[in-house]
Image (tube, rainbow over all chains, first blue to last red; front, side, top):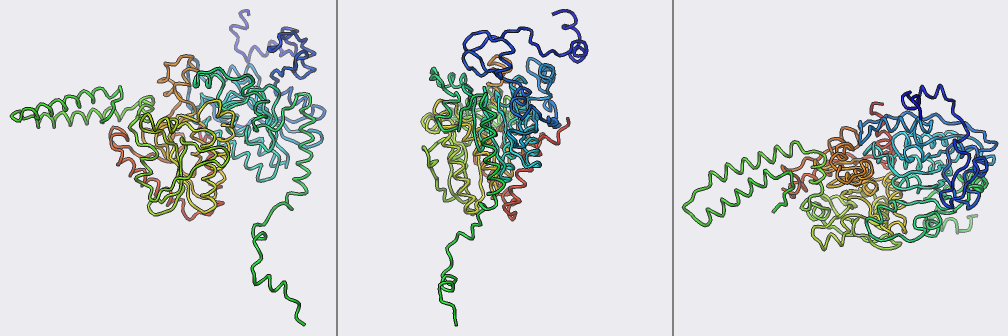
Length: 315
Length: 319
């Protein structure tokens, strides 16, 4: 820290110090096994610990690079949303927290979306960045999920959401809660258009996010070890005053309890998604119309008609 | 007999004096205290009026949680004829925090459902203080499906601190159950009217409150998280609940201003618990009007309007 970092406003600071891709520390300690991993090896391994396979958090850009064919994709514009309509302040003003998060991540809010090919299938992907205020779901994030769904509809493409969030953005009060029904509308639009909607639950996904779009996918995939739940473990422990069982609310636990289809290693994510998307999209293209059932056609044939059909043709 | 809330102290003192005078005059017929009682009663009513005209969000939260506030079954007893409770999620069990069934409101058959908190220790335990398990939300989905199948409107009365946070609830997919219930609300082709009668606690409330018409009682609250929990997360202290309630904008008046709800049902002076029957009848009238306004619309219109209403929330606010 020197006087420049202390006193020069972040935006101005950005003009002087070019953002560097090299971390300050060339080694990163794995939070799970404690081993040191060289940053280049870690990047190569998509932030999966090379010693113990622990899945560390990844940034949206890293997701997109790993997921889209040839790391080629178009970012979708961040939709407009009112900032701080409640003029919220706790120990700090919400607008200041937002400013900090924007400086830290270079994003306008928690959700970033992009469009590109996954194994040849044109797809829309929305990624929730936990580094942006815990990935929390506020108006801007809700609008981004809706916009991603609308983009999928417009381009007749599947939507994949990589969920990660502590829950709702408390600083937006009831307006953050309203993102639960709002994002659910987005999911319904995809359902009605018979476009695949796949959720990838990453560490951690809890609260209002899990209780809305993150649990409404056609297919639910989770990254190994990801914490996934409605109430956070601390809240539950305080409520029931008991220690929670090992592995509680982890990806594998959710799979075993029927909430998640697959637990997929990050290195196999692209291939798995591509395979599922190709099959579902082929079905969507060829079979959707045929599988539309006209309820009236299923009714038993009225007796009068049946007799007419059964009777031998009159000479 | 009402349990006074701490901010009602001036009223409690006046009422105490009135009570004392009554006892005096009963003991000794020669003492004439009628005038004094009348004067004190007027004073007490005025004090109550003054207090309730300026309730803070935190005070409203306490009114909304008042133990004597009318709950789901109080409304059903008075407003719903031929009430026929329906139980079970057909998968795991029956939840008593979300209850519902068939019944007639002003002659019209409806599916009515809501949270029941209970009114004494025994019933509170039975109803788990209005905090539902996944089975409750799955039952709600089933009841909404029934309503849809037979073209009946859905009326929901919302009163919960939130969905229950526990091991069993997580194990059986609390989040998924809530999400499916919200989704069901949004896909209904029949009219749905929701009234927040006490506490609208987060996702556990939204799950059965995503309706064509959402009303709130004058002193009810509706929020993304309880003021207490918000305080311990954002202020890192449990005693800033008052500040959290203020900051989060949890009152019916705030929510109407933000266009999150469609209307407010006025409460009797001093809150619903001071005149439950009046409150229940007012609520019945408001639901009746809301249903009449929605009648005659076809299923697609109801569904489209409900979705558009929720999509438009927040979009009209100044950036």
